[in-house]
Length: 497
Image 1: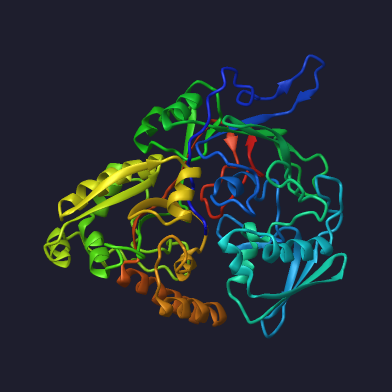
Image 2: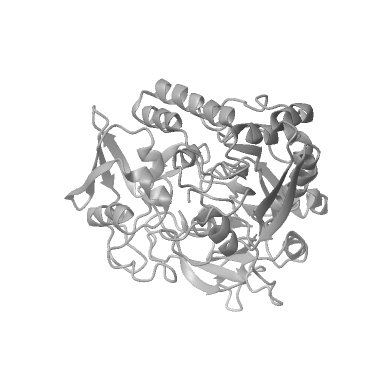
């Protein structure tokens, strides 16, 4: 699966003792400074810790950049910047990338990081990864070690997407001796290491004492998982946590209006909240029925009702932060009469199988109501997320409609795979993506604009809104990311005054 959701599944119980929440620091009885800790609330607990074989965003959200690092990463502006590679050079034919690695970098196991690990990690994407997104690195022809501090990647053809993919989980560097238990014992080069994992409750990340770069300001960060938005809000109000990573009840923000106690951060994400339509079976194998759905939905009313107006209407699988974004919200204006015309007087009963996540549940109620007005009766079936939704909808494709937040950056390419759960099959779309990847910067933008328009014309799905990045923190917490531009919730700059 290509990036699915800021996936906010439920799973935790609030501990009676907020062991992770109140670590404000200070001085011990001996007068020495105490280490500072911080607790961040989430509602999407990982099923395990192996993001090479397990779908969903919860694992890279916790571990990417924090525990595992790549040669490059995305900064807050979405630009590719050095990480484990201090620099890189690209050949004139755009097919060879020579990475110069930082020196004296070690994995948390104590093993040195060298070009051998780069070769091992990238070769392993093809041989061992289980996720469909690994196909993004099919463009790689070979990876070679020039010397301990130099790795050379040769591509089969020029690729505009290669380096960007290296900034995602696909580019994570693994130790040759550290992959025996990826599900339970991650071994990375990052500023944090896994401290403990209380399943159903919390994950603790501890500062890596041998980290090669700037040491993190905090000695530990605890990711606490909650069953619902109210429980997470109450934990922040009562001091059980320091940060809400993603507000799940925007209408509740008034509780945190006191600037003396709290700070609210609002930015953007790559997360397209998609109304998925199963193109592979009736009735949504009929383009006119899919187009009718798009005309039947009043997107502004949905955003206002389901998510308190927070977020942005986009009309496509491209967020405004991408260079090839075009506002496609006018492609299918709200027009119930047009929707009925496209349906030709027919009525349909369909199953809307959704994850039991706040944004999906709230949006589904609005979609159900609006579709009923044009003759489509949708039965909502919430599925436990991630396990049941991933199995029934994503893997088996047993659904008519669904709603999920696709959070991976630049993920329009998921529609090129007809076996993906959308069931969308248009060879012209794949040709446009291939042309975009190999062309000039301008050709890339032009081709991807055409690809987004084709998806919209075909009504391959409906794009309800762009998910906002809404964070609430106690006053004095600094370094929080305004924009969620990658799969990771980057803890590396977090500090507590």
